[in-house]
Length: 254
Ligand SMILES: NC(=O)c1ccc[n+]([C@@H]2O[C@H](COP(=O)([O-])OP(=O)(O)OC[C@H]3O[C@@H](n4cnc5c(N)ncnc54)[C@H](O)[C@@H]3O)[C@@H](O)[C@H]2O)c1
Image 1 (cartoon, rainbow, N blue to C red):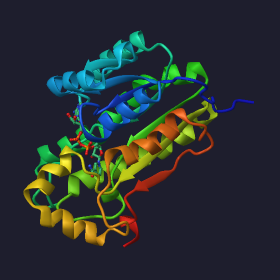
Image 2 (cartoon, rainbow, N blue to C red):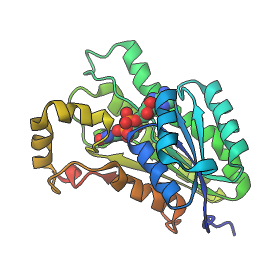
Image 3 (cartoon, protein in one colour):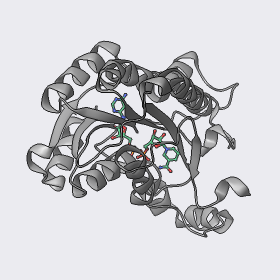
């Protein structure tokens, strides 16, 4: 019988979008817990700053890549595997938004949203899966968005891309469960990362209004989401797969 591999001791995790926000919080939390992390991002300067801040020595490695480019992803995953041969998990947190309604979204922005948020996760998973299968299992966590489940205006391309992430992750869980690989999606609500913080700092009333609608009455901190990621990729939570979990302070309830 094949069973999901239960990680014992330190694991090696590839985290995308690791130069900022949620990805950086995941890297920080995993490294603090004694795990090893390959940090991947397209922003070379912020990735360098992240490595300096994390001060994790050779437990952390730095990989600059544009994840919308499949060739760049293949090279990057190979580099990460050279540093962390026992890689057993992936967290796809890279993503970004180009806003627009269905009518106002250009062809280029539609494709950009799909490439940045969905194709990137596909390229990374495709490159990493053979190693996870060969190792007898592993864990994949893909970060989508509450927007995919609970639409907000002006997010046509972004919401569609994050919806694709959810469907793709369920597909992974079905296809790779027999190889011991779990795959789950996390949908953040409003998490205070650079993606949102700049607007909140400029217009505090926007954050106040939003917080007033969230059952927990506040926006979330990146580390509160990273706590779940740690459980999924390095904890004993190995019988959970194919699920879509909202980390949103209850926003999906209202
Ligand atoms: N912050 C929130 O409230 C929130 C809500 C819903 C969903 N999300 C999702 O969570 C994830 C993390 O968001 P965040 O808030 O930490 O944003 P962020 O902007 O702080 O970090 C995203 C990181 O992804 C990187 N990135 C973007 N495109 C890339 C590419 N093509 N190749 C390589 N790296 C790339 C960026 O350089 C950046 O460092 C994203 O997928 C985002 O869509 C965030």
